[in-house]
Length: 325
Image (tube, rainbow, N blue to C red; front, side):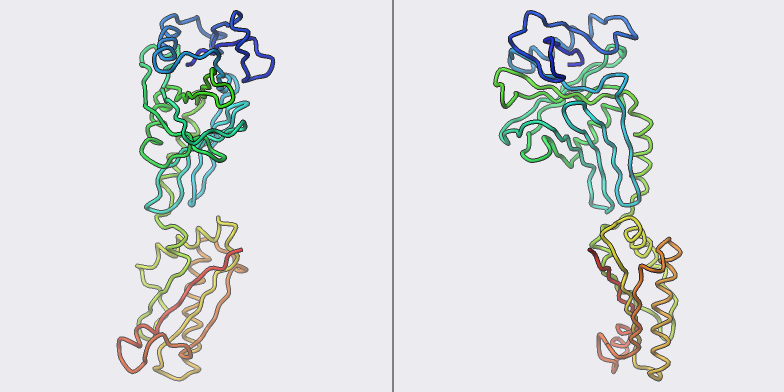
């Protein structure tokens, strides 16, 4: 499907079936390389035998001169996107959290699709790569809504692999408005690898916790101490990343407590030191001073009885929560 069937269209992406006598096989890379007959034959066979016969083909792909991939990312999310002219945007994405999967979506600017439809998926080898074969990848369901395809599974990795190998993942389905027309959408592998390398690096640096895991934290302290235990460090670093990069987070509320051993004035100062110890760690991770609200409670709000050793251990705590927009 790397070859475009051009029906002398007046508007990009819209092919007129009544002009079938004027169809021309061409490819954008012919400006730089000779015509590859075997490549054309491969594409013809894929179209002829993997899909029904259609009167017209609407083909969407970024031109070889304009094809590009864009990377955006931070410790919370990584995105790799590709604009397909007159059609929409393809995007691979992964979010922070150990349970989050790599996702792929393909948005479109045109009409809504029927949710019962399916699309065939092929990985097409360009003519300048005679060393790699084209592949049939199977079928995928077309979804209603802003994305014609949206998936979070191992198949997203397969699409990345095919792009990395130089192939063009191509989605083909029956046009909703023209029942005798076929739509094919290709992801170009031209200029893919530079952004892909950054995307892989970003995914390796994603924090292991989602927002729900760090939005409410309770830290416990040894008797008469305000030193932060080492086992809390990773979650505090993750919390700092969310505060820095998630614009919905307005403030971090740090509420510190003690047990009832000692005077009230001493315990108030101790709880203040515990709150500041947590704040200092978050500041070292880049959270600015205006993002904090500190509450030193001393012994006034126990979580458990102070009559037992276990209860007092539960009262020596700092409770952290975030306030969002």
